Image (cartoon, rainbow, N blue to C red; front, side, top):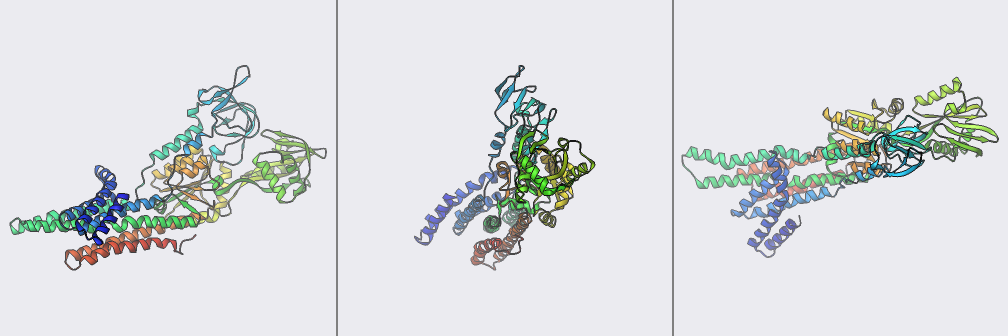
Length: 629
């Protein structure tokens, strides 16, 4: 771009200030040739693949202009240089948008530790490199550590935070015989795990492979302008061949003699067609429209990494939404308190907070926050014990109290069991609180739906192009159905690991859908990378999700989604308007020039005048009040 720009600048100075037309022509030729070198690889690839793209069209037009210029019409040399320079400017403008990176793989690999605590046959523990361990080895995972390899718990019990694998925010209680995944965080007890898969075959390794595979095998994006050029370019080239070869040949046959001047005249007209048909306005107007759309989206809280995202979004027909952290807040909260046996809500929360205040478990934090928010008076518990996978036990004013599973409180009566089941049907975890062996109440803790989620789903379904909105989650079917009902989603796929989410994306793509995936976690990364359009929640997202996604909602506000899709449709409509206007004007001017009814002024308007108009048209997005942001 630098050589072309410098050549044009020098040529204009030599032509208009120094009046050195020959030297100016040389500068323009250098600028044009430098531009041809820029588009040549893409044009040559298109020829080898027997297809047409914008680079082939640009290269053909500029080459025709150079031939005309060297044949004596030096006026077109400056046009040729400017057209190819504008093509490079257009590429540079789109390059202003952020591009995705590949740092996501590194972050995934950091989730699993490199060293594991190997337990010997004598029970002694020694550190060993994870990549040296084979299936069958026994490893110990301490509280606060991540599980290094997939395996089965042999002894011990704990609560594992599997957010990196399943995306669910509430740790899962696991005991002997339960399966554990590499990358999960041990939040409570000590467990001994019998390794079932080597490092390269672990669940986390499969996620890494899925992200890498999705990034490498995803079909190359074909821009709307190139799709247009695939039809437009052959028409222009065939038209030029007809004018330059067929027409003079027919005329010569009719006259019965060869006429060199006739062939020269029609060859010149054919070259003129290539020059006039060169989409100078399209080359710049499309990236200008995209940059305007990117600026407008950023102003309204949506980060778009490139203009291609608007093209894909305008064609999206299916939107897949992760549940935890996307449709929900990703943070457990108290959603209800059922009181029993004469206790008050204040009593139930006071007992639970006294027992849970020292625990780092997400459910414990949710209970403490709820009690603080209600300004419930503090009471002190003694002899507190955290019973892995069961709950908390202690004494308040000498009275034994518990908060956890129903079994911890003793034999649960029908009323207690009914309350536990009621919270379970809502997708909530039930915490049974007892004092002196009597159940005081049940606290329901669940991940809550984002306030704006129902309106966002409704807005997506109202889009003309989008025919399907589906929720994907690693959670159980009952919890998934409850959230789906709250936000207004009919289609739900539950119990999905990362591979399942990515597979669902592929199934819809195979059915001919253009798929957008909305997620926030490491577990969503394969699906985000595989989808035609990946959208992530910015502030709450993992670095992996941010890096593989094409679009980020900066304020974690789902209500921005419908507005983004509306903006994408509007942007692509403007691109189509620009193309139709530019080609229409060029066609009219070309006919008038061939008929001798128009001169250089009309040609300049068809080139420069149209260019200015379509650029201004593309910038309208910055002021468009019809967009629902």
